[in-house]
Length: 378
Image (cartoon, rainbow, N blue to C red):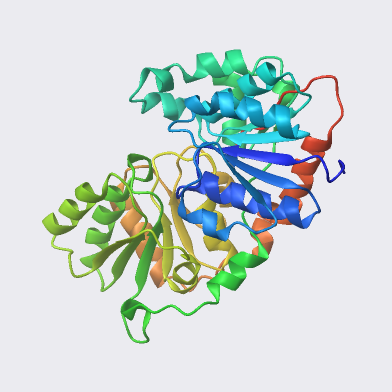
């Protein structure tokens, strides 16, 4: 291990709600528990996960209005603190991290992480920056000795779509399953829908964005309600809320669908729901799907790129359906509710435990080679 006087830095735009931010929360905790001097460097120190960060992790606020404008402050931080490694996430932050290291001229190893499949980012791009993703990531990531992908699907795209050499790519899954997950799941759940004798609750969790495709889940639930009594709860917040609320009203589901917004602790809901459903159009590696399985939940998921097929082992531990197919999703939920199936076991998701994943990250940041920059693609 590097000397404790040398920080290990994690760089993100902020700690707003999302899978990437929760992954970095787990990484920060894990590295700190292993004795590292951890700095969480944020372009802007905001977001609900800040309150969950351990006190032993130093939070560095660069006070930037945007990630790009954080570059000068990040350069100053690198020159002053000289962390032996800097792990970053999200493409725009990754580019800033790489540029900052070069400008600062420090020996910091930059480990950048990418959390979405490039083809889906480009296909759904609303900005020129996003459409040019494969080009500028290829340019900025050129010459890196290793690329670590969080799923086989992401790894394949990095090779065949972005153009990263295959021998540089390896897969390290996200550190999702932690002791805190199970502690949080045991906390009381004060919601009337989960009382004894109530209809089963179908649960979705995620940002209310186009990628999560909650309209298909709501339509699937409408079809399910024609077959049996049930309720749908979607935890999360985002720009699609007006669309989802309008669709719920249009389908006459106001009494049986709730969108309570962001919930700090979703795990009691995951543990006690009848079925957990992932309806996404695309993912990098869906954290919530792994969390639900770890809590012994029965799951249904779209077979979106990428991650669900790997996580559910081709459908062995949960049903997979086509993206955007409300009828198929509804039938899969109904079949899961009616079947006398055993819930998933923790053994099926061991590869996502924090200790297992953290050791692989330690190997990455502690590696000694002639190249400073290294890419970990998630």
